[in-house]
Amino acid sequence: MRKRAAVPPAAARLTRQAEAAAPAIPSAAATSPFTPQGLGHEQPVPPIPTHAQPALPPAAEAAQHILSPQPALAEPLRLAEAPGDPLVSVIIPVMNERRTLGRVIREAKRIHPSTEVIVVANGSTDGSAAIARAGGARVLSYAEPLGHDVGRGVGANAARGKALLFIDGDMVISAAQLKPFVTSILQGETDVALNDYSGPTDKAAVHSVVLAKHALNALLARPDLKGTSMTAVPHAISRRALETIGAEALAVPPLAHAMAVRLGCKVSAVKHINVGKLNLLRRKRERTNPLEFLIVGDHLEAIDWLARHTDERGGFGDAGRKREFAR
Image 1 (tube, helix red, strand yellow):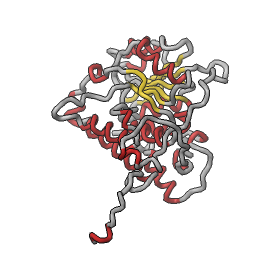
Image 2 (cartoon, rainbow, N blue to C red; image 1 turned 45 degrees about the vertical axis):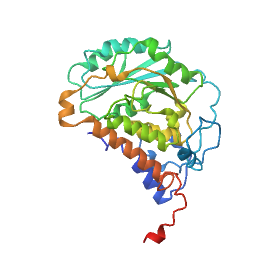
Image 3 (tube, rainbow, N blue to C red; image 1 turned 30 degrees about the vertical axis):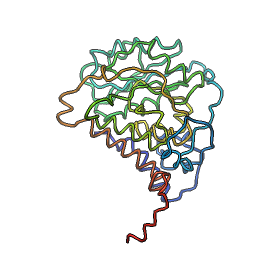
């Protein structure tokens, strides 16, 4: 279970703020969502200027008056201003990954000459934290498990880089495969660089998580993204994206994904890595707490956020129904 007390859901906070009509203050960038200020005082979702984006099907076009396209990016990111600050932060949530963690860190350090590696060791009892320190990583250690993906938000809140790359401690992915995600951020090509992995859809029974990812992108008027998502690693975000959505939202990746698209970040699928073959099945966990249900719930939370910040139909029209005649 996620430690929600430490990292409250961004959606619930934003809803309370909207209902109370609190005075707007400058954006989520002004405060860290892991401080008392949090997302609860974030300004209402602003309208987004219209720019060109991929062609949309008719249903998605109907939502464009609310789900408007992304603004153009600013110029490529510059070097970190503070002396000694890294350009790239690689964030690795870890719970008992000693078998692979050393190799994961070695590849992460090879991505860019100016890289910090942050390992969020939570609930580890196998010496993973010691392995990470020996490998030169900065370790944030928690005795108890924080819950699925909370380590991403914790690591992002501590990161100093201009590009933040998220990977897992149990997947050894070469630096050569990881570099395109960071490069696309540093060169200003995108704000969110996704793994171009949509999951298998050519089966008689498609997995519910794959369906949820496709559905969320359709509701966001981004069917071009197919099943790509911030749920899957590796992916990278710019400092600008982090300041837009807040680190807290990263604890619920579909929510962070929806916020990034809706709040005007440029979101792109950058490189295909088949993590389906790399992702180890945790049989004990799947017997007691199937991750499938958690991730589907995350997507429902993202859809709830979208509806609360557009309208009850998520911006999709009602085709002039005269519902009063059916009462």
